[in-house]
Image (tube, rainbow, N blue to C red; front, side, top):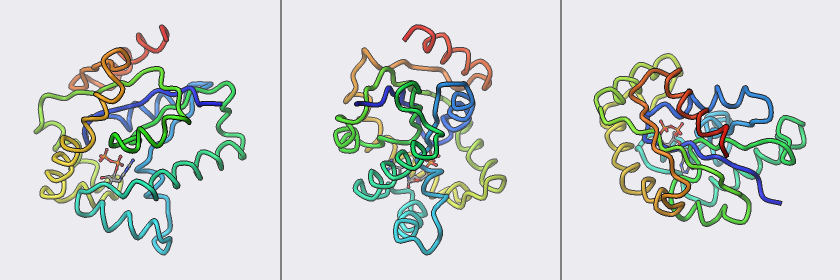
Length: 193
Ligand code: ADP
């Protein structure tokens, strides 16, 4: 059985996490944020170490540990009764993050829509990231050089995922608007799929 899935997509600071949390609070939706799964690891966990090494440089964690962590988390959430694959829509935020990850997940995910949160104003995104750095204790958000590197990584490695899924599944959402307006755009589409 494949998981009924929607993907939240967009560069760092585009507001995926904000929208993912809101959607995850709706009955029959389950939100998984890959970055949160990494940050929830213990510092002495081998994957936790790999995460710190790569994320502090603005790079992606290698695909195998990433997909393993994802699978372990989804299995655990299913066993705990938080995620009900038979009735829930899985809201994925931050995974797949390159075409290879999309390929590795293709037999597991039934992707119904990809929401591409676009923010034309890069300075606004950088400001959002720096504001959350202290609030959420995100070391990778504090340093401007690392932020720039992450934006480059996004353009080079992550954006091609949109081509992987193709224009029929991809919905462009203007995320320069307020969270409630972005949510309305998402819900308008979600009620139709
Ligand atoms: P943002 O969207 O702001 O970059 P995330 O919390 O989604 O923040 O991710 C933080 C970091 O975690 C990324 O820069 C990357 O190093 C790592 N990461 C998260 N998800 C993945 C993934 N699917 N594949 C590889 N690395 C990932």
